[in-house]
Image (cartoon, rainbow, N blue to C red; front, side, top):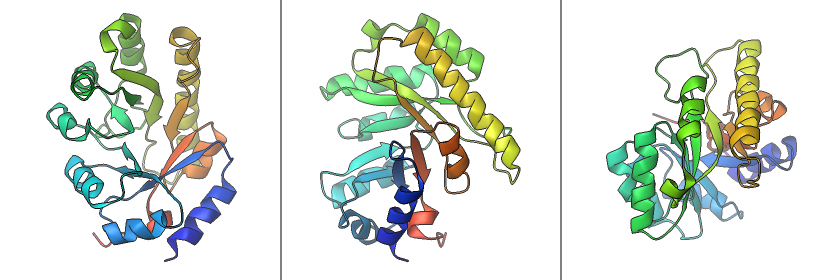
Length: 222
């Protein structure tokens, strides 16, 4: 599996403004280093313990993203270094991130996770919840966090029309939220949607960030 070649192919296929987060969960530091040595620096993990251990084992200039469900009691472990948290799905979690960011004297970039899939098992705000949350949101209360955009996961399905409709709904919500709550903020500009199975559709529907693992590193053994 030539990870360097794989990332080149993906980069060539996607619009230049779409960033690829290389999802390195379950991958060894050696596997990650092969991609790192080609110049790649943007990696994502979905478990805090694995993210922390890789941060300690790998070069310090990697930009680490937290893409999985994040429990409030684990924020403190990644607050000193995480570049972007994709999965902010509650006010409680955002408050905890703000508190831990303040302790570390750094602003942490965040995406609000929106529930767009049919599966109830996926996390995230509903449309109504996120609009209600943002109506009450006070930037002065959250000086140590910066909301950069939205994230969502489509239904795990072979139905491409369903997937496209979910991404389109999320992209529409992104525009409504940007125009309503962040009209003068150029940093509210990230829409994280699309993974190995649906990244092409996501890019066509306006994603700025796709989260890809198996198409880069190959299928996982576990």
